[in-house]
Length: 160
Image (cartoon, rainbow, N blue to C red; front, side):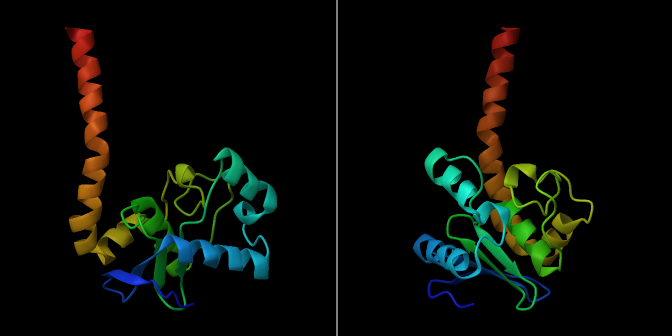
C-alpha cells in the first residue's frame, strides 16, 4: 500500500512507522477498498455509510495499522488522536477488532474504546515515548484544559 501524500511523523523503537495521509487521498483509498472488497467492516456497509454521510451518526475510518509492514497510516489531522493511534498500533501487534459492543481499545468506534486489558496503550507509550511526550501529552492537555476551566467556573458559581 503506497500513499503519495504519506508523511512520516514518528518511528517507534520496534521499527513501526506512523504516517499521515491527506484527506482526499485517504477518502479515495477507503472508497477503493469498499469498491474492490465490499464492506469488509460493518461500518463500511451501505446503511452505515448512508447514516454517517446524511445524519453524521456512526463511524468513519480514519486509520489503518498493518502488521506485516509495521506501518500505521492515519488521515491528516488525526495524528494527535491517541485512541486512534493506540488502536492502529494494536493491529500492528496482531490484534483484530472486538465486537462492536465490547468497550475495548480494539473496538473500531472511538467512543467505545474504554478498556485496555491487553495494555496496548502502555506498549504504545513505551514504543513511541518521545512522540507521546512531545505531541500526544500536550494535545491531551489542550483538550482537557477548557473542560477543567468550565468545571471550575461551575463549581465557583455554586459556591459563590
